[in-house]
Image (cartoon, rainbow, N blue to C red; front, side, top):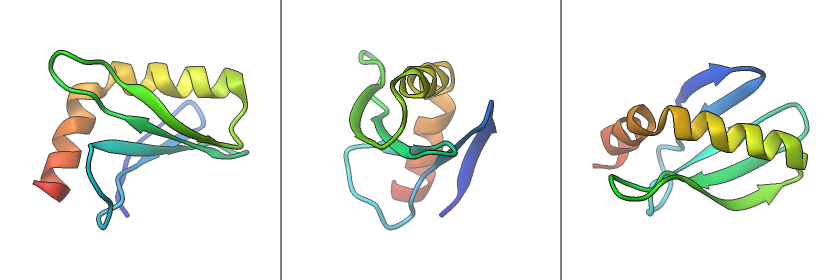
Length: 80
């Protein structure tokens, strides 16, 4: 499972054996949140929160928004 971004205490991962639609798993010290990556006309959105604090969930979403293009490219690299 490639770690595609590490920043501000978050690890953003694309699982190589995962499913569509394009999404990432963002981990912090307490939990994880799954975030849909969206597309050209759509921004990222939260799919599921697994024990991550609300404040960190918002920060994780902003991180994914800021790197959406690169994360989509990584998703496509692994999943076509």
